[in-house]
Length: 338
Image (tube, rainbow, N blue to C red; front, side):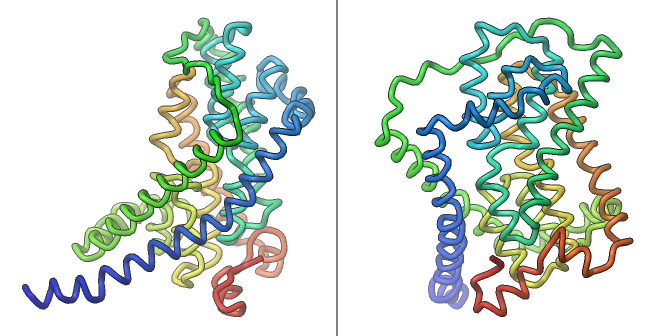
């Protein structure tokens, strides 16, 4: 027993602390510049101009044009930012449950793009591919849901908000800085807990059980079981909180770049499946779209995508869709893909 505790305090704990710091610092240096640029765009009033470009697309999914600013804000900032805009417009805009479900589903697929796409880019997905995947699939699924709900005349009753936040009275720069510091502190805590839990699961051999349970699903999707840990992290924590861990897994070299690419595409469409889904439910959205349709669409899309990718040459895939971050990290002394 003494040897176990001595080994824990002498080796395991310092190694774990270093691992936590490395993962957090990697995520911090990637996301901080993006967060600052997004804040500058907000202060310059650029979001309404960007949303004007998306307003015609709202008609394709059965939404009023002014809902474009809700989706734009969500994509540029995060789900919370989009929700605040939605609640501000709720008193002047009567929407059906079907419309809010469509909007909520699109918000869940495409949100926080500056930060999340930067993370997936560092983990092996080309920037343009990641952007097209998130926005394109959000629009496609939005159109599918709109036509299904319209055809069946389902969820056409006016939406009832489950919750509405109090009006924000302090939007000063200091308040924003404090909010970001709290967010990073929360990310650090989550990373510490998750890495500790992953080590415990590995020590108890439960990780092997999780890989065995997910093996049939991953096989159906055409993804190697080696990507199980990466997939679990993304589905439960999301890309922002789990980003550092996802990049580390991709750079480890333990996962084939094509499996890593497929897993990241799956996570781009369906991540943080518990927390984000509950958030969108407060808008009055129905689970049929924001959970079940999104999950089914993601699985079907990735299953088809992985099979089509196998028909492409390696040169074509690495030129347009992915890059080998493990190889790049080795060549650049651990700095990763650019």
